[in-house]
Amino acid sequence: MRQHAFQANRLSGYAGLFPLGFDLRAVEHGVWRGYLHAQSVAEAAEILPGNTKGRVCVFGVDHNWYDRDGGEPISLEEIARRQGLTPDVLDKDIILIGITELPTLLVNFSHYNMSLLDVGADIDQDTALDSVLKATDVQWGKEESILESLAHADVYLSSHDDCFLYVESRRYTHLVDHLRCLLKHYVSARLKETISLPPSEIVDDYLSCHASLTILDDRTDLVGGVLRVPCSSERFSFREKKTYPLAALMLVDVEAGQWRLERAG
Image 1 (spheres, helix red, strand yellow):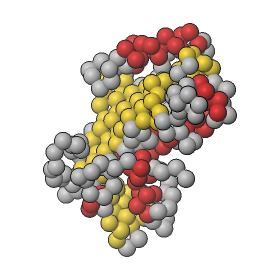
Image 2: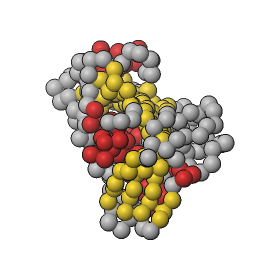
Image 3: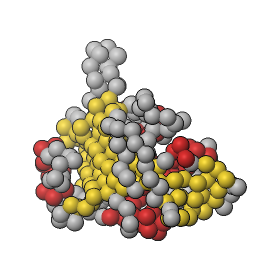
């Protein structure tokens, strides 16, 4: 069974689960930028079909799959074929697949770097490859958005250690969905049962006042059948230990499976 990102990846020096956080930024030309930890590519794949153009280029992959005979890393093309896929091959380590095929590619696939760039059905392979090469020329996290120069793409996603996720999207609602997914998997892990996604209205309500969310795991508790998830509006810092003020509570009625937002103060 696949482990969730914050179950499989831990940092020493932090109690409890891997620290969970989300940070949202708007850049020019209608592009939204989000930083998440911890969210795996497999978890993100749950909400990508409704937020992309239907196909994705997969590239920049570092992994632990090696050829048994020569000991060399297996190409991404060969990995995809071993997973039962027939990808369009732009390069031996750059493939183009349908977004609904991404979960199949990821089954038991141990990777620690991966990038995705969506393309429409009308985009040929040469144009798709050119878009990937342009994307690799831009260092993400800087002022320049990767999507700014890519008219054919709506979504760029980059994963490190399969837990740190950087997302660019032309749709604000796409970034909201990533936070909804993060909250869902956190609550499901705490309760040891699958919980539905929180309504987009609740998450949107929180983001209308705060650009960042840090889940305060050490203060999360279950009271009277309601899981209380405290959230801070301060971005989590991996460099210093600090106290995070409470901004809101995400309340989950376990039996009814209903979510509610309660602001602090």
